[in-house]
Image (cartoon, rainbow, N blue to C red):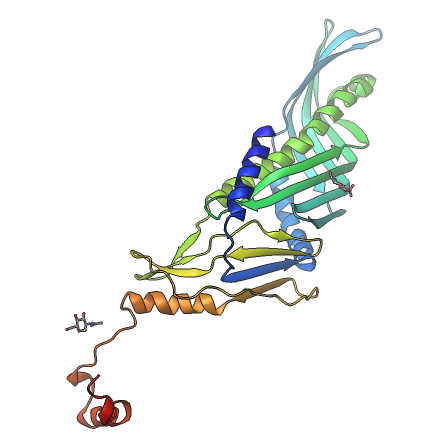
Length: 321
Ligand SMILES: *[C@@H]1O[C@H](CO)[C@@H](O)[C@H](O)[C@H]1NC(C)=O
Ligand SMILES: *[C@@H]1O[C@H](CO)[C@@H](O)[C@H](O)[C@H]1NC(C)=O
């Protein structure tokens, strides 16, 4: 935790030292974010089903039967409903996800051992009123990649219910109450670490995304971030360098980008503005590398057109040039 905070401070400082205006500015509105969340939720449902839940072990004392050791393994998420959720921007930080009344069904295999007997049964555990409040912090690193961190998570697993399939159901029902507590706690203690893991995975994806795109033999397109996103309650602005550069040479463009002001429109999901600077940098690089130069030779033009060009483009007083 401390380490990630230090890293964050460092990257914020590095980000903020660049004060150039962006060539491209992109804006995600709250409407866009919420739409994206609905689409992404399906993917999250799929991902969460592959989460491994660690085994749960313990022992309980039951009247008459005495001490019973139990062991729950093969825990797997069967069903997940996070439809009652909301996503919003967290000003100056990132994005906040709030899941309320989530439901989760987990299956697993319960083994018990006591001095008198041992038995096993499949169990199905359902949790209702699952709550998660997690914030993903969003910034950029020194190289202009996007970067994310876990900026806070709290969770709660509400009511837990346990059912047994097969085996000696009556027997298991006897200590249902005893195992339910530890299983609930084991599940609960997994929610925020699962959130943290998801953010770590996101970070790995971001750090591997390219910050320059190859355009052609002459040019590269720099899409690195110039600074951390500007986040308010309603908007999320990305400042992208948006500059073409030579593949093998760097030329300082004799221009600088002008400030881009995006219109204040809430009804759109995504706004993007590409500046003249970006277009000019493309022209400039291609001019410098010679890609825009062509030699007009005799065999490219017939006698008549050549005369025409001569007359139209090179008036007598300028032919010396
Ligand atoms: C979620 O947590 C943040 C900070 O930890 C808090 O400010 C916010 O009010 C919480 N959201 C809800 C819906 O409880
Ligand atoms: C144009 O001609 C010059 C001189 O012959 C040559 O050096 C140059 O490579 C040519 N450029 C192109 C684009 O063909």
